[in-house]
Amino acid sequence: MSQSLAERVKTAALEAGFDLVGVARPDAPAELAFFASWVASGHAGEMAYLTSQVERRSDLRVAFPWARSVLCVGLNYDTPAPYSREAPGDRGWIARYAWGDDYHDVMAALLDRLAARLAEIAGPFRSRRYADTGPIAEKAYAAAAGLGAYGKNTCLLHPEHGSWFFLGELVTDLDLSPDAPRVDMCGSCTACLDVCPTGAFPAPYVLDATRCISYLTIEAKGAIPEGLRPGIGHHVFGCDLCQDVCPWNRKRRHQAGGRFAARDGLVAPDLAELASLDAGAFAVRFRRSPVKRSKRRGLLRNVAVAMGNSGDAAHVPALERLAADEDPLVREHAAWALNRLKNSEPDAFPTR
Image 1 (spheres, helix red, strand yellow):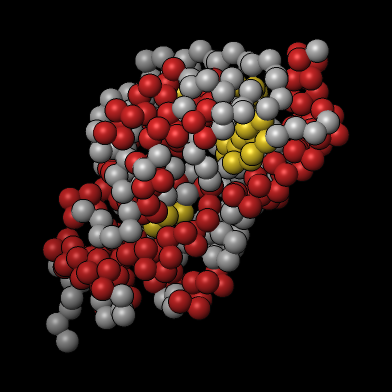
Image 2: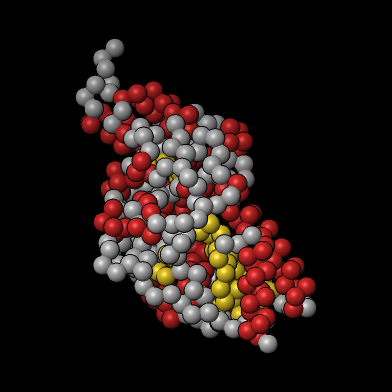
């Protein structure tokens, strides 16, 4: 009976619009034994939603003692646009996942649709839905459910979807037969480790978030450490490098529909245009976009760093305006960028 129910639940998940689905037991997966030591090492940085919930995230049953199964789903967000290393060198880069609508909203709507369908299939049941919003170590449970195998870059890899997919969960009291995890897919490949310009991988399968470009441009709210700024390159929101070079992403067979289609100006955006955004323009430009999470000050901080790394004297006027911005965080990074351009480009500050 439980196996039959599990299969019907999985079919409902695919019909609801998800690309991947699997079932994990609520017991903590073996990988979660590493979570507490990872946080203790300082690799989580200032992500308080992780560091303050070690016990809850280390064992899902702490938060949900009634849980009997975790239904894990994946949603592909890939698009046919170029990869970051194929973009023009004089443009900025926004991570692929943030080109379209905010995935939190998309995933929540699909999970609600799925929960309603499951109530029709199984009758009344208890559940909580999450998509990067609750006390669940999503990758650990998704890996246990067979959605993907851990890559050396700590992303989950699927043989047909690569790593370009979002994760979501329905924690439920339904008794569903669990799926088996996937075997390692990386072998001897180290492409993701070798490409990281900030050295964010102290070892295979281990991420030091405090050195990760995605963390530095999104999660870090204050000043970016000066020693890491040159490695950020042209990234203004997130980073795709370790995924771009993954052979499994080159072999992917599926792409997303219109939900995550790139909005105008978000694929390799013009740095000068981004630098010109005031508070109102930022709010309009990134309404219902993941980029809004950085807030204007964070985005312009990142834009200033990208301009400083460009070596292009054409950015001097925009940086001079940012150096007079009302926000001290923006001003400080713009001043750094101006100094970097001055030192890297002799003619960046012509004598008038």
